[in-house]
Image 1: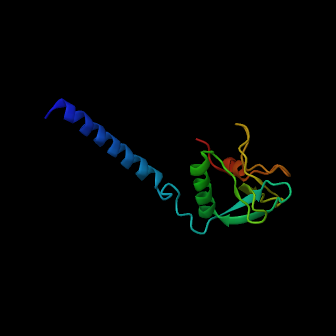
Image 2: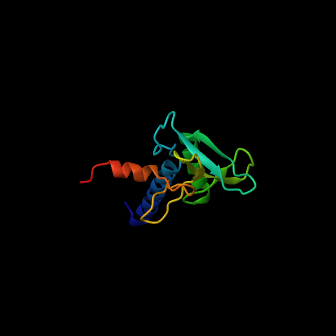
Image 3: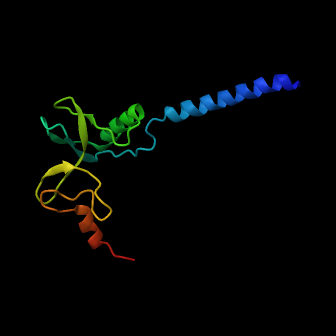
Length: 134
């Protein structure tokens, strides 16, 4: 075959392969998110005029966040609040000790993400104290 005919054919094959890879990776249907049936998570509105907190299905939360991540490219985008409609809902934690609901924020290296700002309790810290060290 002529070298001049080979170059356009090879280029067309490369473009077709690139298109197939692009569309198969873009159209993943949340296969990386486990089923999470029945699992709930707390969320809190960061809008000062609203501030509502409520539980929602964890899978629904992750689906909404995944959609927002694909749209915006943001690592931890807010989702729409069911009360005020603003995109200001973030994952939250309800303290087992004092029942305060607060945003799930990763602190410094030496702290736990679920530490209650009101009473200082951390379920993760308690669990780490109970687990045997190696």
